[in-house]
Length: 217
Image 1 (cartoon, rainbow, N blue to C red):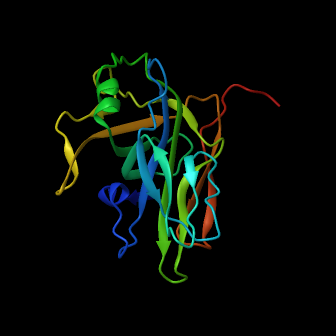
Image 2: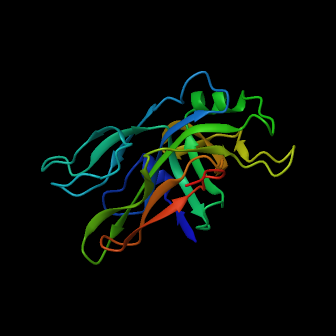
């Protein structure tokens, strides 16, 4: 099982004295949206000077430099929790915080059990290896760099996409409100994806998600 809680507030406002796991939702489209959700949040992208993330789905990535110790990118949301049991058919669960504008678009959707297709979903989660003093990429879709699937809908009234109505402040002293989104996505049976995971700078692996059904060699 892959269970990656993130410090979402640190995703919005990094504490330079701490190095918490954090992550970003880099793409979300489908579900009847007129266009992909906007990457309307600019965030710090912690990584190592002289290196760059290998994930190709980061939007507007700028690298750290000697005078600027962290890079930056744009994202749709800041991750609170990622989880996946590891099976090719198991749901991927993501909780994350988005702007008021993106939350309003998601709340306006008229979803039914037959209208749950997600054409693209991307994420990037980073963590810090205390032993070697380096940031590493803990999770992201490797090939392709965005997954497709559908919202998990075990029942007509159990469609697992939820957007809260009560806002949260990104920090007690910053008057910026964001909204929590939770989604579970399952594969469609038409595409197989390769996902990257790592538990340290050196311990990396790839896993398959999704199973192509109905094809013959």
